[in-house]
Image (cartoon, rainbow over all chains, first blue to last red; front, side):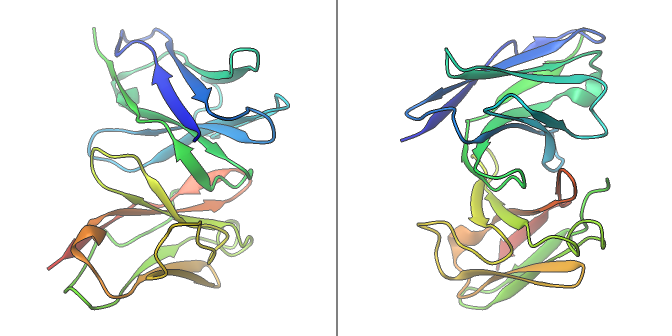
Length: 118
Length: 108
């Protein structure tokens, strides 16, 4: 059974970089798209971006200037860096797997709350 | 790339059928048969219910069905049950994925 687990700081200061890692177990990184999705408190889901196992990426145009997603196949992990954060970036961050660039995500991590505050 | 438009809330009695709409444009919903639907119970992990407009993943009840007409996709839940009470999100490809605004389903 595929499992995804997010890890990283739960508190980030404004203007700093939010960094999260998703560890994939029970399955291979190969042949899938690996996404980051977030949900601000009281709001809806927002797709942040994904990385294909080959290393190609696609980012939400509204976040593209601040987002980097990378992959470490040796550790079965992928990571999110979101720079210059503000309070608006406070959200539950999920990592997810999909078999298509259109994001039908079939496996999700449990989600991790990241708060941006000084 | 704007969020797809969904009604804020939809309600129904047990056993009834309800339909949630997801309205986009000719650049997203209207251009691709790549609409998916997620069920999200607060505090839980979102669950994929429908993909590619009308396909159900293994294990998803056949009470859930999807369709599309023009720039609007729809999710129908038939035989409404108490456990269907949740938030529902559509998602369409538009050069990159874009989610809908979300719909809260209430079982009366």
